[in-house]
Image 1 (cartoon, rainbow, N blue to C red):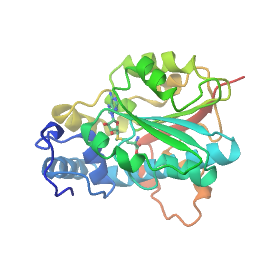
Image 2 (cartoon, protein in one colour):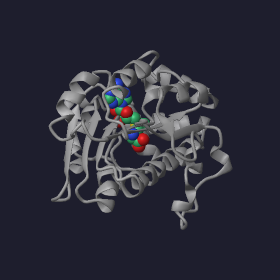
Image 3 (tube, rainbow, N blue to C red):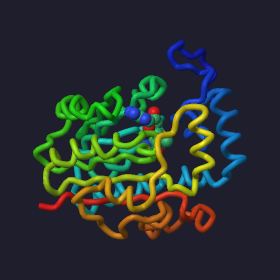
Length: 265
Ligand SMILES: C[S@@+](CC[C@H](N)C(=O)[O-])C[C@H]1O[C@@H](n2cnc3c(N)ncnc32)[C@H](O)[C@@H]1O
């Protein structure tokens, strides 16, 4: 938990998605209102904690695969959340120190912690953009100071789009996909309609956009082509890359879906 007095604009009297997610992950950057709300949600759905952890491990495995096996050196992460080790740039730069990473979020507490996201290897670069992801034109303009959009970029939006109502995700992705170079990647993770009770709790407190089924999530990828194993539960996306991991399994089945897809040449 954060013990230093918070600044006024953090609205610590109300739960906030990034801080509640940090609570699920066992992090330290949450306040009383976040813990109270998080506990309430965990009493409805105790699987949310292992699901959040499985989502973070999917992030690490997928970034590792993109950097190591597909030679990706540029990453744009939408809805980054609070710094949680390993952060995306740590995974990418461990595989390829010259990797360049741009983070985007609109939560003031994430902005407060952006320093922790901006520690780059000397060969690479990291940047942080404080923006609503809906403003994709501005994001691409500012990200272009760090990333070369004439070359492949891996865009990730993990555990983000269920906070956005339709048609926002489809619209922003339509604006983005066409402007990425062939060989770029899109990585998405999303909760599934089985979590309706959780979504209702969020809706009452901080607004949860829309739960989407696998077909709707697949549609967000447009003409991008899934790499193996396609759209699956986060704990099923190449689990063999973590041989030591005793991660969750059946108890979080059918609660979330994720995939990585490539823009065709
Ligand atoms: C559940 S967290 C996911 C964090 C991280 N992507 C992960 O999967 O570990 C969702 C994040 O999306 C951010 N977010 C939600 N709506 C947003 C919006 N419209 N624009 C920018 N960020 C947003 C929240 O502030 C929060 O940090």
